[in-house]
Length: 112
Image (spheres, rainbow, N blue to C red):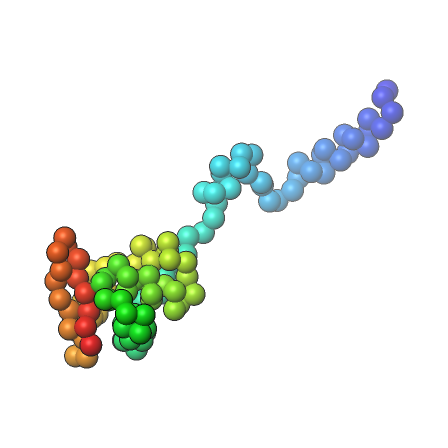
């Protein structure tokens, strides 16, 4: 019998009874991550984002507004694409303090 063979067998047996399975391939770990959903902004959040874009001398186009809302909420800019533009537009149109304007290429912007 090889030296240490018995201990090695016990070690392998105890590892196989673990309740948490690890991905066998690094690519599988990427699929296991939970996606983060950006919360729906409140009216005050939208107005604050529009004002901050004005302060930066930027026209509040929908795609820029989404990025600013994500930034203010503590999300990455890349996560802003997950927010529904149509829902945001409806929210802006429902706000009496905002004026939504259609722009070229299907884009829209917001004015105070």
